Image (cartoon, rainbow, N blue to C red; front, side, top):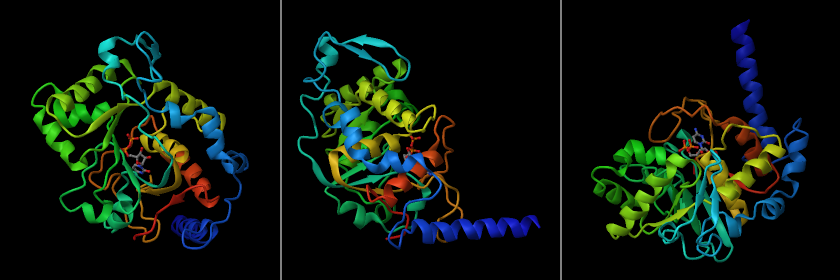
Length: 311
Ligand code: CDP
């Protein structure tokens, strides 16, 4: 009986995914989620009005002068901006004009063997999360073009020994992304700051073409409040979800790849690793399936395009 019920449930779920939300057919709004329909109705303009990522997502010398106080969104720490810190800020807003098409690439195992590399690279602006590997066989599936890549300090800790030893490895690793913007959450937690500044200083000292920029914690805080008011209450939003919210403000067309926080492929049902390059488990502070529900809703309303199929 359990086996039959399990099979029935799986069949109904996949039938619903294939036919009701329809990644191949024109999408219809998802049923039974009530409030979400309202959320997404004018999501872009509301994000613009309440969070203003276009001007405020990134700390710049224009929006954060010497002497101003930075309040960390993760632990509430406060920091007065000294000249030395100010000098590490972007001189001006890196998003000067609105972008046409952006591909935002999450790290889900769904990208394995997807052959989506060309499609991703054809976007005007490509954003990636957490310094993901692109070479050694991945390129065909995830592409190589990178205009912006994020780096959580935990990656710098594990991959590059917190930049306390041989920093050349970090600089060599960055070569994959050319002169992309390197987005660091330097002022989210007190423990992030020194490490993020070390990354920026290393880039400068080694003449790396990468361009470090810092997330504005005030913007991240506004985003958390925005989504909490819409019913999304994880301990921390995932990098991909923060980046999706930003992309909705700075890009006219947002194409998502590599967003699928589930253990089986949506069409062929075989098991997937968490990332396309490893099977490190999702941190318990995130609620990626709940975030995915919202992404699906945005997709079904035509606000963004979620790619789950192979290319
Ligand atoms: O830093 P974080 O743990 O949030 O992310 P990650 O594991 O490096 O992956 C980057 C982003 O891809 C995540 O923040 C998610 O939005 C998305 N992702 C997903 O949708 N499904 C997965 N299985 C893994 C990541």
